[in-house]
Amino acid sequence: MKIGIIGGGSIGLLFSYYLSEYYEVTLYTRTKEQADAICQNGIQLKYNGQTLRREIKTNSFENWHGDEDLTFIAVKQYHLRTIMKQLIEKQTGKTDFIFLQNGMGHLKLLELLNSETIYVSTVEHGAFKCNPYTVEHNGIGQTKLALFKGSNTLPNSLFLIHGFPVVFEADYYQMLIKKLVINAIINPLTSILRVTNGEIIQNEHYLRVVRNLFAEIAEILNLDDEGGYFQLVLEVCERTSANRSSMLKDIEQNNQTEVDSIIGFILEEAERKKIKAPICQMLYDFIKGSES
Image (cartoon, rainbow, N blue to C red; front, side, top):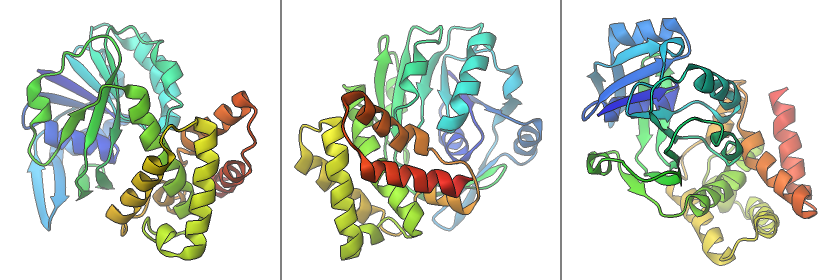
């Protein structure tokens, strides 16, 4: 099976490393310089004090045409609109797509693609890009996949990769909503407070904000099992207590965040349903102000 991966960030490097053990993988990067660096050095994975190396076929995105059986889209949400335009213009093959973005703002773009089968996913791994060809795998989680359209043709071997668990979910919307709720609480609060994931539930004052924010989000999204969702948020905070959220890392590195696809999506839902969302709006404005 031939697999294409578009995006040379931490997730693109991580997926390229693990999938290349079982499949013929080509990583497509935004710049020729990164593609050349990976061709020269391979992809290097740091995990448990070891540095492992794997040779990867690499090319710049301008040379992608969708000839692989399956293409993973591993760019950040805010790059997706530009990428989608190029995917539509450049695709000549009949590849299926798997989208790895946070949030739910990208769903309305997916119908534009000329593809019979499209999957969406949530990625729970902790990964940090050290340089153009090195990624640190600092937390093993699950990759959850669900069909957005079409029929499931994924090989069973994809769900059997050692150290890289992949799970198939029946309902893409419920899968994405769960991750959205988690991200909408952990990401903005840790970014504004400049704290780790665990600290927002360990500090009683921060926890009060967490509860109020969750209540607002639960009303907007009409969550059917509020207690279950809130428990899930607490469990993720505890399990990743020492981690710094991706949005906090973006703020610290003066990068654009994915707040539009996370809190922005919730604000759009609130406006559509005519529900007031003062906490979400305040957090959104704080994060956008930090990006400026």
